[in-house]
Structures are given as structure tokens and as C-alpha cells.
Image 1 (cartoon, protein in one colour):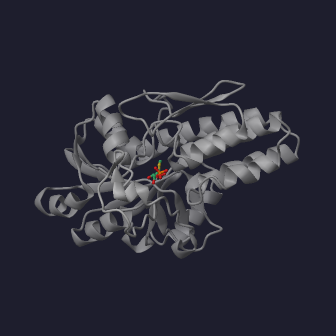
Image 2 (cartoon, helix red, strand yellow):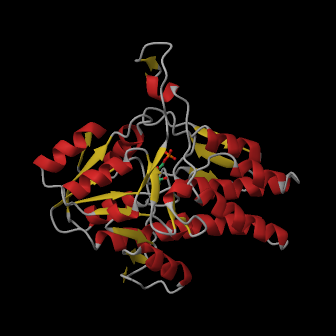
Image 3 (cartoon, helix red, strand yellow):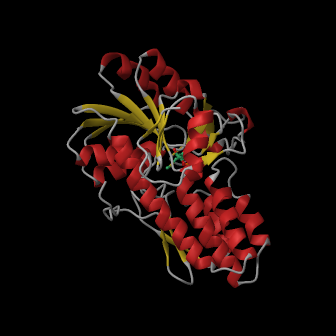
Length: 344
Ligand code: MRU
């Protein structure tokens, strides 16, 4: 596979040596506003408030947050503060552990943060190529949430597969779910697909079953926030429902994530912490209250798809197949880049 510097049109964050700029994703697609972070607290706030979101992007910006903390002599406190910003995406812990090791050894933190960002961009390219090898000509693919340039340092995870399949001329269209309640699909993925000239239709989450039954959906590609050692996968709320529907309709269901999302310290999905967010995001939409006042509501922001519903996990080191307990452990130990399919 030829290494090509595929750079996305959109960037979620920009490191400027003494500050980190975050594109405020809460305002997209209608306004592009960059927020400036000069302290680790501003970076942690940006992650917590979802100015920046998406597991790999959170890891990258947390690494730069640690650089800012070191400059103000605020380590190790800054590590702990950044780690608390969001609980589910393990890339945050993964990046901060890397930064902590370099700090403890007196190494160059800025170099390490830049390496984390560059590695993620390269991982995106590899996943795009591995994932696109699974796509047949004329395919209709379904995706969920936002997994593109706004969620990573590069082309994205699942989005990178859509991008690559489209550039290879194999894609008929993408069906993109709106992703209630935070609408990452309607606001962010639709914007990125439009910008990249990828044919797509936006659907509400509740239309997925009907379209799987009445249209030929060839495969579903989603991202991940944490993959347990056995392959159970936490991703945006609604992912589990899509996987159940995919199994019913015999549609291949793929998770796409870099190895930094694989958490071998978490044995199974029931050990993954699930973020509960504000119920205002459920009872309101676009700043307008829809549900009656004084009611109870729930907002688990992620769910866990059992490994048994996942056809394959596309990583930057190859495609893991069940049983994932073996294939993921094999890929994580393996440092050779050229694996294509790690059937255990
Ligand atoms: O709450 P978010 O928007 O941070 O959730 C994002 C997702 O669930 C993505 O699917 C996941 O982080 C993978 S992104 C490459």
C-alpha cells in the first residue's frame, strides 16, 4: 500500500506551539468558530463540554493539554484533571499514559504530542484502506454518529472507510443516521460527507430497520470509544440497536478503530464506564424545549455492542475477526504493519 499524505479538508484542532485551537463543534455546521486554549484547564473544559469530541481527537488534544500543563508546572495535577474530562473514550487515558511516561523520563512532551497526532493520521489512512477492501462495488453503506476529520487527526475511522471506498469508485451511497440526541450525524457527518462530495442520505435513527428491510444495505461501519479485550465495543448510543438490526437482516457489521481504542485492561463490555449526560440534551432540541417540564429523562451517551454481533474490527494493524480475545491480543502485540486479516 502506497503511503500518501491524505489530509482532510476539515481539522478539529490545531497546535500552534504556545496554544491549542479547537474548532467549536457545538456550533457546526452553521458557524466555524475556533476556541483558543492556553491552559490544561481550558483543554479539559473543551473536551468535557464537547467543543471537541470523538475518541481519537480527544486523545490528541489531551496530549497537547499535557504540554500546556507542563509549561505552567502543573503536572502531574494536569494529567488527573484531563483524565476526568470524559469517561468512556479510552484514547484519553491511552494518550495521557504515554505523555506521563515521557514526563517521568524527562523527555520532550511536545514531540510526543505531535507524534500521537501524526500516528493517528497515519492510522486513519491504514484503516481506510483495510476497511475499503471489505466494500464491494456499488455498495450502500450505513454509518452512525460522527467518525470523520472532526473526530480524529485525519480522515477518520469509519468515515475513512467511506471516504476511501468513495474515492475507489465503489460507493453507491451512504445512509447516515442523525444520531439522537446530540445529532452528531445530522450536524457533523452530513457536513463532512457534503464537503467531501460523497453521495449520502440523512436518516433518523428510527428509519434504520425499515431501510435495512426495504433497501439493499451492504454493510454497516461504525467507530468505537473503547473496545474491551473480548471485542465488546462501546460506541455512541444507538450503535447496539444497529448491530442487533444488522444481525436480523444478515448485514455485515464492522467496527473501525485504531489500536489506541483497544483496552486490554478491560476484560468485557460490562466493565466499560458509560457517560451519562445532561437530560437537557434529550428534552430539548436546537435550544427549544420539546418535552413537558418536570419529567424524568435519561441520557446514557454510549452503549456496548456485544462482540458476538460484530463481523470484524478494522484496526490500523489489520482486520480482527472473532474470537477477538485472540485476534486483538495478537494485533496489539504485533508491530509489523502489513497484516490484512487476523482471523484467529
Ligand atoms: O460523544 P462523542 O461525539 O464524542 O461520541 C463519538 C463517538 O461515539 C464516535 O463514534 C467514536 O468516538 C469514534 S470516532 C472516530
